[in-house]
Length: 519
Image (cartoon, rainbow, N blue to C red; front, side):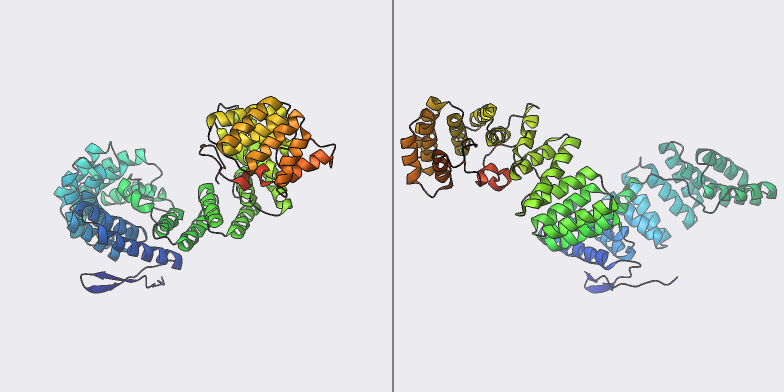
């Protein structure tokens, strides 16, 4: 087999360099491992506590171990143990030593591990395996028996006891152990093969052949639940590995490398919605919305993710577009998602995009959210705005609730007071407008008074106030209405083309927790 050698890096250990052999490593993984090494060195430069330094070395060793960089893993686990003799690092170094053929070294590590963890059945099993390979059958049998006692009749431990029996020439005993194990794991080709060997050694060639026929194409070993090695496996060349690499890059402030790592993760696990959404969000935050949209479209074309998650991401990415056709598309997507996915985030986005697309009749999602007893000034405000946009005075209670929940929210007070005016509550509107001017005298509060004067019927006074603030859009709006520019349309509380009708353009205007949804 032809092995490919990749120069991962030159690691400094005890004043000499190690050139690392790494078979089958992609450049992306090699770069991620190099990043991990750099991050590790930065971490060690500030860590003083021996236990924390030990864990830093051990974590690096696990990363090397997961990617079959055994020499580097061996050194890292050794450095971890020098900092603090934590049993976990003895165990994992023992596994690496066993993989490298250092039987005696692995036995010493496993013995150190079980001394600190006497009730760890897998640790005793590995101690027994190493002892048997070293020729100490007595120690192996003692370790396997201890593992069996703690591991609730594990088939793989029984197979170990059978190996001891075969080594001692007790084939009958070996067959007993293997039959018990096989009854527990009848799919294990390895157990069938061991039974064939045991029967052959005992002189029963007929049964030996029968068991040999049961071996199958692969000699599958009985399973072993090794939680420590599972931790290592989670850092292997997988989507999780690249997700961790992305976290490392973000910790250093390198968003480009983080995005590259997440692209690799999504390529490996294209059906993982959490990874895909995280990448889409990072691309958008990094000003690379076009790439995010391309990714969404590719995933949609391949039908690799649920439609509603992709539609939500698609709508969210288009939410700030300046092209009307894209806003209309985003609003339709969000509307479809909200109907299918009855949750706050999609309903909030659907409401916001409906407002932005001037489809105010579809913005009733704010009412649906509030019907869940959600005490939100934000949603109440936009419920009032969506109702006001279509001339529905029933939305007044939304504004009223918004100012009750956020009494210092000036924008809500202005919208509420103007809505009172256009809905015929003229006296209350003027009282509130005068109070607003007393608190803060500016163009918005003065124009609000103009709305109140209009409602009372003092059209001249309303026109005078508005004329003073021309060409302010709200002043043009009121004067145009007084002139009868659009007799079919009722007076709007803000100019028709004002961004104040647009929740997305307005952004967060309150400290209330219910606000624009994220991806």
